[in-house]
Length: 60
Figure (cartoon, rainbow, N blue to C red):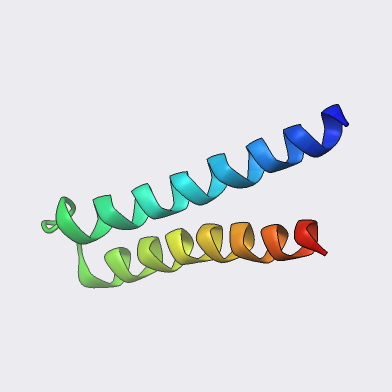
C-alpha cells in the first residue's frame, strides 16, 4: 500500500517537474541557443511523457 502511494507521488513529481521545465525553457530561456532550447524542450516532454505512461500503467 505504501509503495503504491509512493509510486503515485513519484509520477506526480516527475510530471510536474517536466511541465515546469518545459515552461521555463519556452518562456524564460530566450537567450539560449535554439538547438539548446529544443534539446531542453525534448527533455521536458520526455519527463512529462514518462509520467503519463506510468500513470496509465498504474491505472490498469
